[in-house]
Structures are given as structure tokens and as C-alpha cells.
Length: 500
Image 1 (cartoon, rainbow, N blue to C red):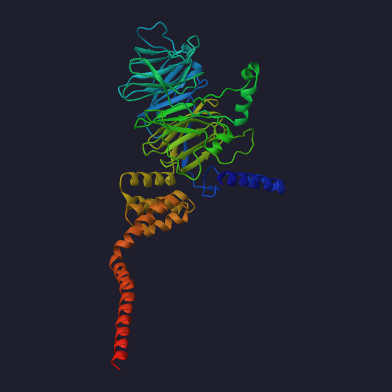
Image 2 (image 1 turned 90 degrees about the horizontal axis):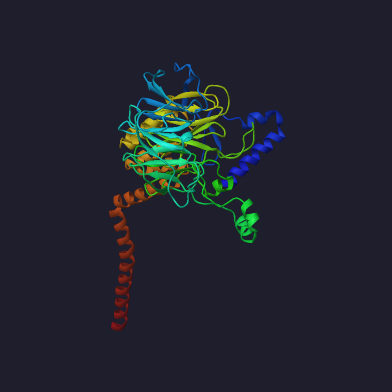
């Protein structure tokens, strides 16, 4: 049904464009910030974020410009940038709303290692203890350093029967848990994330994506010759593009480049949430899957679905996915409902040429553009802060305050679905079930409506139990009494007859 809605929407836009060429731009033009309603229609929204500043290397006080930077990492008020093309890592400290100061720039490491120079670093992570982990891709390794850049440990090509021992290890992205275990993405390895213990021992693969294929290709392979099979695409899991570990230790992994039909049918996911067993536990209770834009028309040289190249997770469990195909950011709540969509491709502030990485600093978002060699800092608007406030108040158990915040959100955007659902959820927790039902009904939230209705029905029965029992007794006793009276009257009539 939802695919039909999306198809009808795409056809409608095409018909409008053909019927009225002069209005075609207006018909498909989208505001900077938007959302989707229950029917899949695009709804303009107040801006959720505003651009605070766009930084280049010179703005940070660097003498050398960035060269194809690939990733970032944020730890408290520190931000680390992998300046891949320049074989260096830049560490900066945020000292004000818009101010960053260079802490250090390094392209080599110290200590007992044969190779001391970094070569094409592609990602970095810093543990709570201050240890630094770097994907030193050009040197085919992951290195662990202490806070003074002294070499501690090296992680090498996985020793496994499924991995060619002659291949070159090319780690591209990594995360580190609180126990010092390393999970990394490596090129040419599609069995999932490579997992290493704290001592550097490879301990297996985690979270391989499900294999997808169509039956026509599968049957054809059964009858094809060996040469034909070799030329055909193998049925193998999709490799991840990026990973992020949230504050609870769950790994969010992006798998860009999925087939349109697989995304539409649910056979593939653009983003996954992995537990320690590697199982996907991402909740998707939204009306549409978490794969970005619903409409995949062609235009401006871009086509196909959104391509999630990175993800970051805020402390309130809002996760933001970065689409490198159209340069957009998509925010989802912990239920998989869309919170915001904004961005685009271009040279203006707030737009991107080739977005590569996203991080957050509290509610602020930081986006790295590898082609423009820039870093964009986004700060929530009044509207965005109100939404975050409502969500966080609910999570803290302040349900009445959360409902009040959602009502303030509605004053700014009366079409914002999450506001209605948020008010309904706050009323549900306050045991105001009938009022909650009204809000859920307005936005077709069947699941929450059912929960509220179940509680309302129980409450209604408890309040009216005396009346209900009385009605049942009356309904049972009145016919019984009438029957008894008729029986007695009949016996009296018969007695009168015999007496006469």
C-alpha cells in the first residue's frame, strides 16, 4: 500500500510537470526543512536547524588546506578530523559557540613501531581513558596510541578462513566499546564488522547484512556455465559504509547503495542498530522505513534512493543519517518516526558538495564535506529545541511538561505529526486515556490508539461496575420475576377453575 502511495505521488508530480511546464519547478520544489505525513505527502516545516558557520582550514587557523577529509570524531568538547589526503589528524577544542582552537596536528606516531608515519588515515576514535585508535589505511593497520601519541598496539588483517591471507587490510571505519574492543569496517570484507578483542586478537565478524537476490538470477545461476557464473554478481552480504556507537554501547551501521526494490520491500535496511550479538534491534514503528527520501525521481544529476554514508546518535536517542546522494540530513526518533529532513546539494551555506561524515556536540550537528573541504556547524532553532525539550522531558518522566512543550511546537507548526502523537503519549502516561485517543486518532496512530483504548475501556468498566452489575441483574431478574408471576397467576387460575 505504501509503495503504491509513493508510486502515485511520483506519477502525480510527473503529470503536473508535463501538463504545466511553467509550473513544474514550483510543483516539485521542496523547502529547506520538510517532513512526511501519514499519507506520504511532503509537508513544509519550520527550520529545525540553522547554519551557525561554515569553516575551512584557514578559519581554524591551519596553514595547509584540507585534502579529501573522510571522517570526524567528537569526544566531549574535542573534535578530531581525519585529513586523509594530507596524511594527518587534526585535534581541535570548541571554546565557544562558534570558536574552535587547534590543540595539535599530527601525521606520525611515537614508540616501538617500524612505521611511524600515518598514511591516508580514514577514521579515528578516542576511548574514555584517552587512548586513540586510528584506521591507518595506507599502512594496512589500525593503531592504538596513548594520549601522547605513543604506540601501544596494532590490529592487522583478520585471520579467518573466509579472508584471503594474501589480501591487503584496508580498514575504513571503526568504533571502540568501553571494554576496548574494536569493531571496524574493512574494504573487500563483507561478512560484517571485524571484531577485535582489547589485546588485538581477531574474534570474528558481527552483524552481516542479510543476503538479497531475485529468483530469476538464482534460477539462471543453476543452469549457467562456470564462465557465465563468474561473470554474474555473487549473492553476498552488503558491506557497511559507516558505524557509530551510542552511549549505551549499541552500534548503528549504515549500508548505503541498497537496491530500490530491496529497500521498498523491506528486504534491506539503510541503517541498522546492532546489539552485542550482531542482531538488528532498530525499532521501526514509523509509517515508512528509515531510508531517507520517499520519492526517488531524477533531477540535477541525482537519482535513486538516499545513500546513507554516516550516522550519529544524540543522547536523547534521536539518530541523524547523512545522505551523500542528495546532501540531506534525516533525523529519526527511537521509534523510527521522522523528526526532520533538511539539506541539499549546492554551494550555499547549509548545502553540500560531497558530505562525508556527521557528528554531534550535544544538540549541535557537525557535517564534514570532503569535496568542499569544509565543516558546517548546525545549531537547533527555537522549533528544534522545543522538539528536543519535549522528547527529553518525556524520557525523564515529566509527562505533563512534555505535553506542554509539544503544544508549543504545535503553535509553530500545526502540521507536525510528532506533536500530536507526543501530546497523546503524554496524556496516556497521565492516565487521561480518552483525551489521548483523540490525539492519536487525528494522526492515525493505530498502535498508540489501541493502547489508550484498552486502558480507557478498563477504566470505564471500573467506574461503572455498579451500574453494569445492576443492569445485568435487572436483565436477568426481571424476566425471571415476570415468568414466576405468570406461573403463580396460572396456578391461581387453575385452582379457581377446579374450585368452581
